[in-house]
Length: 473
Image (cartoon, rainbow, N blue to C red):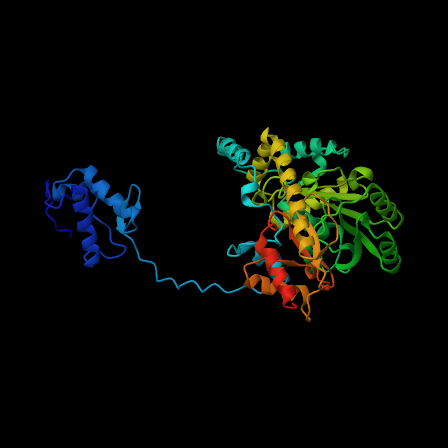
């Protein structure tokens, strides 16, 4: 029972709501009201203490808001049960640089200030106005239109938009040839799981996209490296591999390659496609960065056909990574099997994210946004390349566009860990580096690093490298 005498004009200025809430709080502290016990109904409490029901309701709701009471609408109010004391969070520990760090921990750790090795645009570079407008539009869509799992191939209007957009690059396709996925990385996984089998041999660029190497290993695929050149792939090395091993496929990035930033030339593209035809290789074209190009680059799928090439792309670089919307384009037979693989792995992709991506892409701001990003990245390339030259770095390619540069100090880091060891020391100084070893199938360390130009113009980064060189690191 809660005993108190309300005062209409309390000397301390407390209102009737204050007094009622304080009386209940005191009863809880005195263990008169115990966890889980029901309070009198609002009407009963008001009658017992000659208060209005509005006053009692306000007092009860105040205690609900601060976690002292739990409300069950239409039933009763009860004293909240206190949660068991939670163990304190473990102290932050410096992560260990390694493949697992590059593939997962780097995304979770926001404590490091200079993210020179990351793979995304800075948050304040994104099309904020377009994204907010798209989300406001999406909020007005009736829930009933988005309540189901959606189509196995993905949101139809977005697939139609993609087909129209690719037509501008000379790639004729239809919405029915496009499968939307949870990001371009899932598209790669689906193709690997569908088109290949455990023990199959494939060719990959060296260096290549680090996540691709992990996906191949998880599926039991044997990856052979082929050197990446400024024009494309080293066709002599690929030819030798095709003669020595039963290759099934070759994975390439045609535009603004991750990690070197290089793009195929037309001659390099034709030579690769001719070799793939001779040896009956499936070509998997990873093309997530094309929208960041300053100058055109050949699109392999448009030069050949979906009979020979599987096209993969997404919107992490051109819209926003957190949307997690990617897609693949291939011939009808393989697409049907890929759709079945997608459904087996996790059913449909998130239509609400696909709708958001569609609205951003259709918004009139997106074109101007991409032009602005390309200009900013071009300026960043000029600035970072100059900083690299001043720090005595070797730059593999100077693409002038996209996110990445592939470079290394001319004074190769000493010691058995090489660039990996230097990256570990950089992390202690608040700098993320992406050592080149993680972009090779054999993880060889030749001193290279992948740099994201949008994060690499910080003078503290190059001061670290100069200090390491002076110390003979």
